[in-house]
Amino acid sequence: MGKGVTIWFTGLSGAGKSTISAIVAQKLQALGRNVEVLDGDEVRLNLSAGLSFSKADRDTNVRRIGYVCRLLSRNGVIAISAAISPYRSTREELRTNISDFLEIFIDCPLGVCIDRDVKGLYARALKGEIPAFTGVSDPYEPPLNPDLTIHTDSETKEASAERVVQLLYERGYL
Image (tube, rainbow, N blue to C red):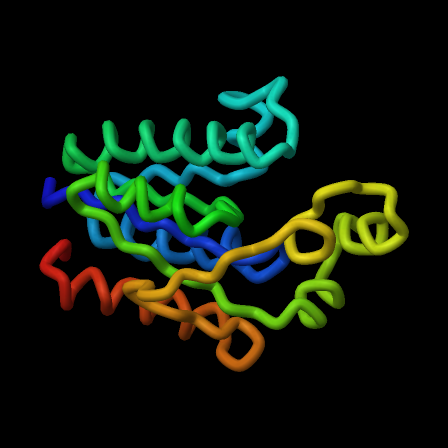
């Protein structure tokens, strides 16, 4: 079965977290590993319905995702989180509480994220229709020491996913 680990993708909306996490999951499943992806949008609908986008509720959402990831990874599953998780202190709390934790920073310039915005969220936030939108009217705090930084504006999604898989080999999870 192999050793479990939590892979925590963090970055702005539209940076590529969900896309890369899905490719990584496929690659790991092809290697025979048990993998679960906890996508931020899906978790909001199913596990965190009713939470607002206040700092306290965002932290609660991230902690809930972290709790599920911890349960999965301690049982040999590779748990992948693809959630904005904008606040550094909350991500550091997860790193402390989850014994096998890899933070992957999906670093993409805001302008590129705005250009990629298929949901129209940035346009609405820039018009003031969405208050406290991460990267526009609410802060995103990049990690200070991520295990891996991926620049989705300058490398392919396949190359990015391969770098994550390589990190898992280097750290002894594969």
